[in-house]
Image (tube, rainbow, N blue to C red; front, side, top):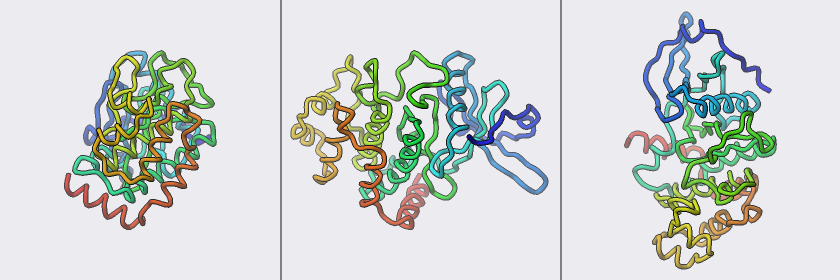
Length: 290
């Protein structure tokens, strides 16, 4: 466990808020500056947006996960407020993968390099008994060195359990595995399904389906679910090579045990990735186009 503790009110009083980095239903993320003599340090403050129970539970759960994990590709927690309503996190100045994908899809080699880092983090988490539970483009950050960092652990679990259980369905619609809608999901393999969705979006520029909620009857998901892949590939008009198509057939299986583990998928991405220099050059290029 990391030595991460609740911070006194004086710490927060000494911070100067610079801007709003993001704002959602559950939380608001602020850029804060700490000045000590000639030294300045930037933090991302993730604070409760509404005083409602689900929001409080999300932040408390996230703290309980982040104090137990540390990895080069996972956002670092420096501390938190004594009432658990604000997290002091590492600041990643280059935003999320959402911004980078807006202009055009990535070549497979660039996308594989990004996903290689994601699956390194997931391999570590899964081996330690942790699952993320809400993997999506907006929860993958880019730090000051152009490295990938996973964030937003409000739905994360340790050995299948949250610190405080919630009634809401984990994850974000369009990224969740089909078993999430059942009473006994496989959380590790659900993470892997979400990873495949992210990779699909990165190399095609659009999602593989809109929803696999049984109540929505999404036409693309129905083709996937029923293994009508020839019709599916024609319908989405993709230019994916056969190796990528084979990977998605496996990763989008409604049978969780058929999906690759984080470690196995990490090896797949490793063989496809480009150099770190090429990856950084592509990220920089897209950042200048924003």
